[in-house]
Length: 306
Length: 322
Figure 1 (cartoon, rainbow over the protein chains, first blue to last red):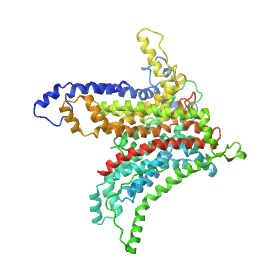
Figure 2 (cartoon, rainbow over the protein chains, first blue to last red):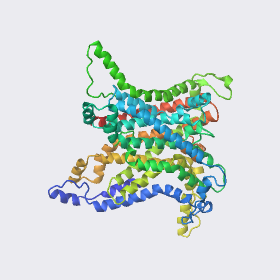
Figure 3 (cartoon, chains in turn green, brown):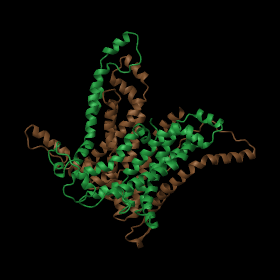
Figure 4 (tube, helix red, strand yellow):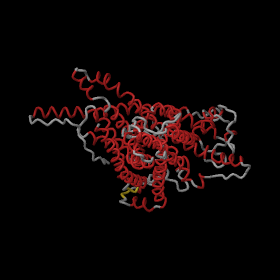
């Protein structure tokens, strides 16, 4: 890939560098000749960013086109905008509404996130603020469960759900999503709770503050943004999930991704509708993702990278 | 599957006093510390470890739910089938090819993007936001967009652009691609690289920004070329982050189901193991065989995961040491 080259054109021959060493060395400015190099890098970055964003932008644009304008070659970029595709997606002519599946997705994602937080917060507390012995072993046990592929456990889960009559039941899915996100949440939250300064905790304890007060006044102010980001990331993972939902739900408890996979089959012109559907179902994730942007890396890397 | 070999104990372990009273008090204290941990731990063991044990047991059984009367102990038969059945063997190969190519390509592009974003330029924040967008499209939706809006041979955007560019030069015979039927594996790889590059970029960018600048400055003063700085200072520093991105990416992409399911429905040699397992138990009802294939995936993942855990651990130790 040619993406690596833009980093190279920096070959500022010893010109400015030599000049600088001649004088008293100046510290602070990290990069010599900032204007020229950075313009090149900036243009390259902008071009690549647009290239990566084209599918998303095209999805949004096409969702506002009519079906006939959406399916042209070459593409009709300047075609008239319309909300028809959205009306169709919400079942104007077919009568099939995506709302039940969207509500199922929201229920499963929100409730599983709440459960994850309720289980992960005390665990993270016992791994950072008042750590148990061998707390790192416990951490790595949590992580290793995340590394086990879902397919390796899905059959027994499916059989269990079938036996106890929990197939197509949103609560069973909620429990699955809770277990799916719990290890990530424990890791993330531990890294956020570890940022609470030890001196503050000790001082509060010496002053005789009880646990609730410490949680509210000392821990919450430092850890709250991180906990919020943890919640958003768990929400995203649950919202996106397809395999478990596909196997464990059906008519009643089907989530939005399941609806989406069934929705495409055998229609005529439907490109604008597919795009509208993709926009609608991605909106919550886009919002959650941008809201968590600052902590996204820390979350995705399980707290290993800040 | 605890691969953890890590042991750092926090300073301040109290030396146990010999008195019996103190001992029991200490034990009570230890349990008080453990208590908040237990709900999460017990829940996870029940929901993830227990089912895997069941999978392990089923994998040694001859069990097809359509002919339940033939259910019996099968020994290693299912494993022999997994490794000899041409479809499942192909699925193993496909999984490896898919994972390795997506991880390597997205790491390389992610590295390039991270190096660019490490510099200051106008609108850097916006560029970063635009670049994260692919990661924030629901995977099923992304796969549908790639299949219908971008790669479709008659009205997809890619062929549309080809037609448009060729028509600019007065040609009506623009080349038209049909990746989905002619190179379906490439279509899957392309869409996954698009989704995973932002992930790699974010991790590598965080790595770049944590690099100590004074050594770079010193090297610049000494007249080191940018390439030399990149080769001898930046790259060694980034090594851990490259490993982390690659291994975490591998763990997620090995498990990929959405893209294969949506883009090609596993056709034309694109069925990876998760998809093949789904097919084997959900449609073919071969429970024993599906379980054996699941165990094979776990063994493969353990191998990767051992390295992943080691990398996460070394970064983790650094952070914990601060």
